[in-house]
Image (cartoon, rainbow, N blue to C red; front, top):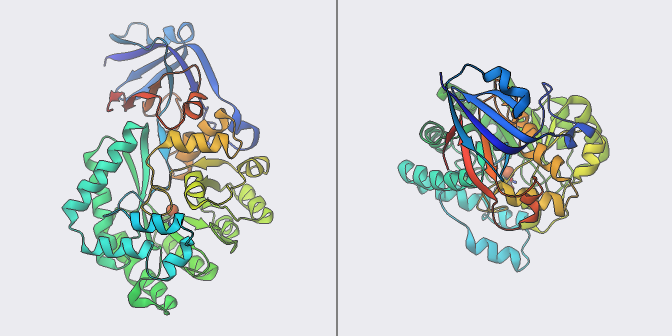
Length: 413
Ligand code: NIG
Ligand code: FE
């Protein structure tokens, strides 16, 4: 098997110690100034300064790629997206910038519920084309693994339809996709005022159908005032675990309902948003090893205070970062934008941010063993970009310094 050697790069990567990087480890990267990455059969065979890896590749047939003047970093993992949607919601954006609160729009039947109507009206093939187009944008900005949620169907048939589209994206595009079932994203109009009955539907009808279909790996719930209560969220996620799905949740995005504490109780893989999460529950997350998936582009777009990333890191919670790409609260596919916001508005160092979009994000979607760092044996998913260091991702604002994207050793964007 031929080895491809990417050489003369400045390599920056978190180092995987078998778990997400918490506390001080979040800010620690391996740096190789005369870096070389050897790829064999789509996997990383060796990584380090050139002199330190020559022995492990000697005697191999070799192709070489000169990466002079470039940085080489792991491909981004986007651990939280709603990128499968049928139409934009530009009118709603204009309402929001004129002052209408996000949850008020939802309460009046707009917001998530307008996307539900769009999905129910959409043709499966068209939905695939629209979703794939956005996923290709994400790929060109450096995302090589992404989570995609259902949650705009809100009935069994349309949730299954979304998951089929997500699965087709996984099969047809050069990107790893982690599908998540989010049947409890909102209470659909036909269940208005009967949220407990809708929760029964999610548990008794949707979960069995979704697991029989076999696409979804995780189950998520929007635990929020006026959406699903803490008790309803617990019921759904406990049922999902019994069906063998991993669990995660939208927790404390607008109001502190204790979602972060529930994530700790259930040993969820991640709790996401956390703009309003309190200290006690953050401490419980640290103890349970739950990753905090923070979504700064959502805080930006909703014009809310950012999640307290540095406090979470100080409390020992591993922090991941995601786009939350969706047509309402955060319409962006760009991980470089998310990194910029996290560095300049949340105070993360570029190293902490890089760990947040790679290693910790991989653990937040159960992919830590396969992707998220340049450790030997992992998939050769990596990016070449300009600049001297990962700081360029925050420094060069509003554009992407990512020049080449490699998935399993092959250039895909
Ligand atoms: O993560 N908070 C709930 N869900 C999404 C928004 C989805 C939408 O507005 O369409 C979020 O912000
Ligand atoms: Fe979300």
